[in-house]
Amino acid sequence: MTRWIFLGFLLIVGVLLVSMARVQKKNDEIPYFLRYDSLAANANPRIELKVESSIDPSEEQLEKLVTDYAAIWAHLNRLFQDPDPKPSKERLTERFYLHLANNYVDGPSSSIKRKDLSHFIQIKTWSKDGLSCNILDQNAEFSFEFPDGTIQKTNYSIAVSLLFQGDNWRLDAIRFIEEKN
Image (tube, rainbow, N blue to C red; front, side):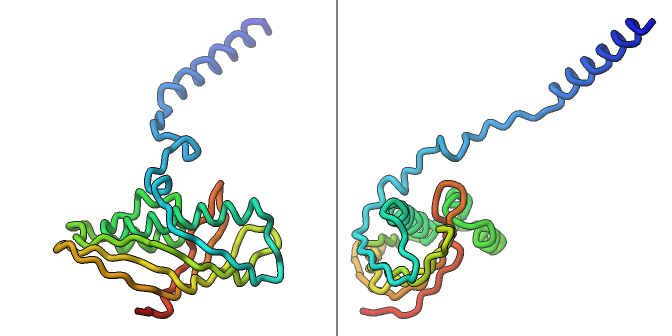
């Protein structure tokens, strides 16, 4: 008798597992670590770095910061032309992304192209755990290409807050302090 109860129990569990497998939705999205970021791969601004924090990051941490900072600016330049934040989601913190997504209005892309040429980064604060930093980009140089073919270069002083989430640095806050011509 107990054998029939046990077999009935196994049959019920088997039916439940099969029904759950059929109901499960398949996610065809490629995992983040397997995606190719063409914007980041083509970003090559000149970046100088100076550490003014009481905590000194390692060389590996600084290299990762520089490559991710260039990638963040490549995505910000794309956002300057096309304000859809979805392709840049992996370079922004969730709070920053939600702010952009809530303010996104679908419309035509801008005809002005922005490109970052160089950055002079001063690391003002670096957390002990290496997961956050605040930097001052003293001399960020940008070129703006207008539809008529003219190019204008402008320098900015920019305050940036970054958080290390997942496998890369993400933009958490940004403020353009001063424009220098």
